Image 1 (cartoon, rainbow, N blue to C red):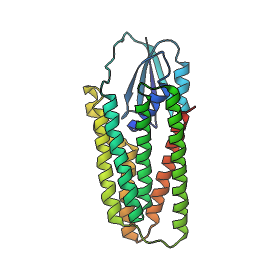
Image 2: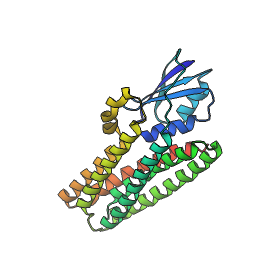
Image 3: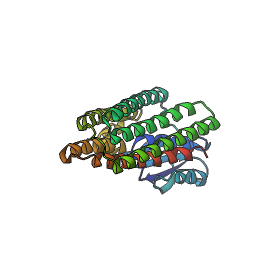
Image 4: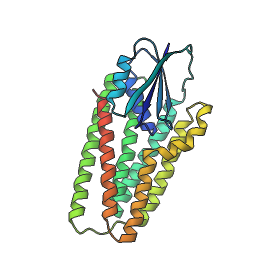
Length: 264
C-alpha cells in the first residue's frame, strides 16, 4: 500500500472535499481518502501507480501539489457509515438559506444577498451530486454535474447583468439591516454545516473545527455581505453591495466550472 500526500491550496471548505471525492470515485486502486481541510492536505492511500490519481486531482484546478509518496503498512480505515445522513443535513441547511437569502435579497434589493444565495445553492448542488453518487453510476453523476454547472453559470451571468444595470442606474438603496441580519444567520448556518460535516471525522480532528470555520470561503463571503451592509448605511450608497455581489458571482462561476469538470 502506498500513501501519497497532496497540498491543495484552494481546499478550504467541505464543498471542495466533496468535489475531490466525486472526481476520484471511479479510480479503483484508491483504498481511502483522508482530508485535512484546515491544513489544506489530502492523503490518499492507494495501490499501484499515482499517475491517474495525480492527473485527476490536478484537473480540478484547486492548486494541488504532490508533497510525497511513501509506502505504508496501514490497511484498515475508519468508514463513514453516516455519510448519506450528514450530506442530507447540510444540503437541507444550504438549500433553505438559498431560499431565504434569495427572497430577502429580492425584497431588500441587495445583490450581495442574492449572490450569497447562489453560493448556498452551489454548495447544495455539490452535496446533492454527492448523494446521487452514493450507490449510483458515474454516468448519472456526470449528467447531474453538467446540469448543475450550467444552471449556476446562467444564474450568475443574470446576476452580473443586474449588477451592471444598477451601477449605471439610479437605484434605491438596499436595506442594510436586512443584509446584516440575514448574512449573520447564514454565517451561523454555515458554521453548523461545517460542524455537522466534521462529526464524520475522527476524534483526533475535533480540535480543527474552529480553524475550519474561520478559513471557510463561505464564512468570508458572509462577513463580506455584513461589511457591505454597514458601508451601505455609512456612505448611503449601493456601491458596496454591488461590489460584494460581483465578487461572489465570480466565485459562483468558478465553482460552477469546477462542477462541470466532474461531467468530463
